[in-house]
Length: 476
Image (cartoon, rainbow, N blue to C red):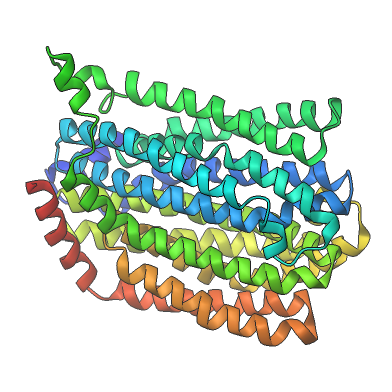
């Protein structure tokens, strides 16, 4: 009986092109890369659900306070992620081209640039925190607590940015297990400190924010330590240098690297910023509906995240596989990995959507004792369950496009879908149907978005454009 190849051996076939890969080997590699990433993604959303559950048992007001600013936090997190992705995709291309030294140079430049970008995001976040709840049209009783919660979370943006760079760089080099394990452990750290701050020290929403901040700090320190000191491809000790000045020079971001970051990351950042802007606009639509609707929407999004986080885990695997295939200039593998990943994602998220529809009330009761919130949340979750397979198609296809470095058109497709389809429908349906109308609009838009991404993936132009861009990038 033939021995199954390891993840590193299969990635070696991608990079070296010693022979063609069978579909079984491609599927095995997809699963091996996806499983740890799925665990990490589910753990990250479990952390949010735990936060919500702890606050939900304090009261609906505390839950609504956090839910009010959660979309804005996601917007800042999306911008941080986009900037880090611009470096991490270049790491994947370098590793795929068997240029580990070049990959380490990208990481070094990224650490300085990402810290600076995180500090910029923190400064902006702190400056808008006092006005943010009022801009969102919240009840006055929510404003002070929401501003305080957002301010504390904003302090974590530089830490979050560096952690994102380290985790994404490890993943794109083919090391999925370590960042997945550390991000999963962050959930446990968050539970411990949340319990201490929220219940033992009676700090309420402030305690939830401080618990998250501490969890980010501990995880970032462990992640960067492993990246720089332990990883077999990216640890800095592999670069021998005799001059301290030249060693420090390697950390100065180069013009060519930043140009590629802008090419890859700018469309992602614009898309995530504007998409979250649409989510904030939807929050404004929901805010006048009252605390029950805000809390049900927040809890519903957290619960639904359990369904689509596996899709994001598979998307991360697709980014790694397509990125390394692009670096090795293998268009056949780029397409194969994209389709195999999409099929896997749609299958898993269809199952998750079914389970969500069946157990929606029980899942809502985990995070709140308010029966009105449970009933409304369960109803909107059952609406959303229909969209999960097509949502998976858009998530995984987008990850494949990110790995190819071809991010402009997919980002435009995401923007057009959420602004034209979802926001328009939500505006029309919310006045008569309330929160149910907002979630019906979301369901329709996600199905539409999935179809558009499938059509885009069927074309061949994205692989041709990617190979051309990667050739230029590696020659710089």
